[in-house]
Image (cartoon, rainbow, N blue to C red; front, top):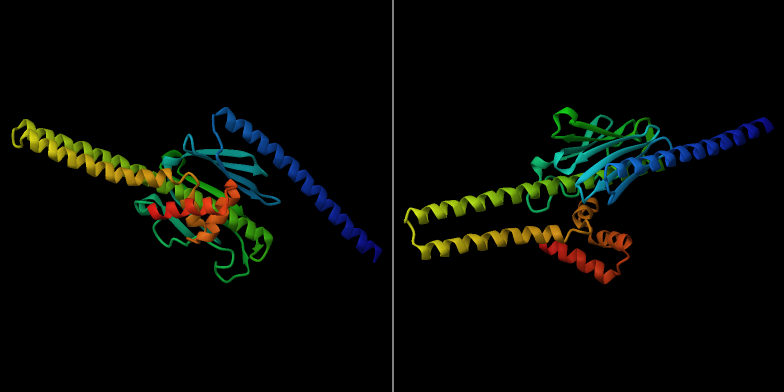
Length: 289
């Protein structure tokens, strides 16, 4: 009996010591990654953290320079920096099956993501098995030389009712929501670029009609004003949506499946705003979305 008790206590002590050692290594690696990112001018504006015993990772976002950094903290230390504009597809894979997938080619202009808006995965909605053996995020980019990026989250059998699994799913949800928001932003930028080209082409054709004396100066000025009015109306709406999203409301909409109460609560927690102010921000964004 005493021997069994001693063995149990020994295992507990070993586990505690192991956790302390892992924590120290992870903290050291994280500090070194901070330094390395600082050396290349990466400014972290958002961070998604996976903090499991034997797997610690981060997805960092630099909104100013429009880059993300995929950071392996523990057991290995590694950094992979990607441009927003290079990201074209993201999917979550569990037990070698794609659970959810989105790409810039399927993004709907104006802010919504193609497919089910509430498609973010939850820990109690995937399959019926009690365990999972692997869970990872796959990112595809336009860079031919470095097109595939994998974020490994679960690499061994894990029970789905465990805290470890819930932590993994939460990280996967947050990373997926962040990346789909980035892809949607890429698509909006492409739309603005296309609209700018159309606007210039319209003015060029109009100028040619005037120079060929097909239309009068008065007709030229009237048509030009209509083109300018249409341009301002189109871009004004897009800029309102983008400017109003400084609190990442679109990301929260995707993450919480349009649940306004949860979106408002999250905004209050992030910013310290009171209920009336947070509700107004969310209401205004959704109205212009």
